[in-house]
Amino acid sequence: METETKLDSALSLAERDKLESLERLIQNFTYQVTPFAPSTQNPPSLKGIDIYGVSLPHSGIMGGDLLVYVDFKRDYNLKARIAAAKAAIVPERDDDPKAKIVERLRSIRSQTGILLADVSGHLLTDAALSTALYVAFTSGIFSELDDFGEITTRLFENLNKSIYMQLGSSKMTTLLYGEISEQGRFRFLSAGHLPPLIYSQQFDKFVKIEEDRLHSFPPIGSMPTDTDIDKPETPGKRWQSPLGYKKRYSVNELNLMGHGDILLLYTDGVTEQRRGDDYYAETRLEAAMREFKHLPARDLAAALGEDLLNFGSQDDDISFVIIKKS
Image (cartoon, rainbow, N blue to C red; front, side, top):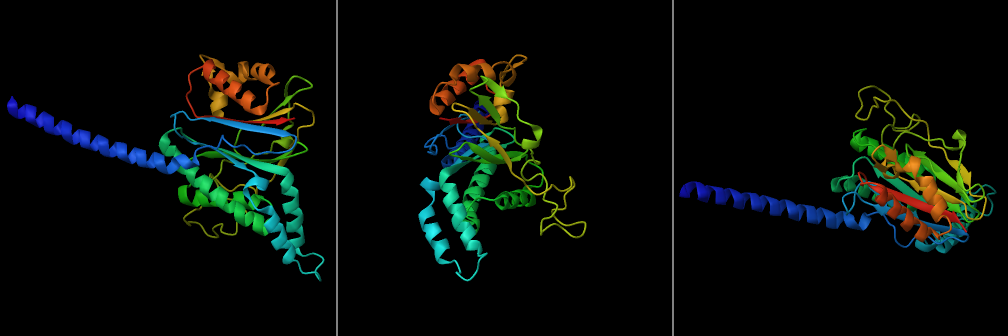
């Protein structure tokens, strides 16, 4: 009996050591990915447009959702880039591409970008892919601004190819990147992401958006582009696509025309939130927008987030962005 007690004690000690080791690994991983958690603080400032986002991880720390603001005026030295591009213009060339870069850099001073992505799964470990996506996206912005004066679809073609080459189609990630201007024009690219919603102040409800203005592509990394220069020329190459090839990305455009109109970007945590057989997006979302529409974006987002959580138990990461024409 005494021998069995000592053995049990030894096993318990070994198990405790393993648990403590695992706990240290989790703490270290959490420390590494926390800086890349969805950025709900310090939203971009844009004349005539009020922006605020909310991210509610299912795990309470960080999951598969990614929210990134791209505040061109605040985070990038556009003045220096414009000066550098102007200095590089060749006066004798009427079609010098540097002149177009100057024009585009001036244009993006009156707009801001928003990236919203959703990696399948909501565990802390799913944050690894969203962190990698964050680093790749934000790193790519620098070369995009230097080469083109704006963020182009090339950045997302490269992201798509890189993720596909590394992971294949083993992990699905939807993505939406859009840029809102001071005038309320929203240009966006969607890779399998849920379409934006527009709440009209005039009609006091969500208005229908025509399908031809909501063109979407397969989730990021699920298949390469049919015209990619690195597309395999012969069968058997490492990243030959069993699902086929997608078309090159194109950009959609919407307009917030009226004062008080609200554009809502969101992940599927919003549409999957339910109480029994009742889904929040179907039975409550429009009424909640009608109730909170008078609030500034920050307060509206807080009220909507609280309303979502009160509706039912949270089964997924929840992220959304309020863009209000003020």
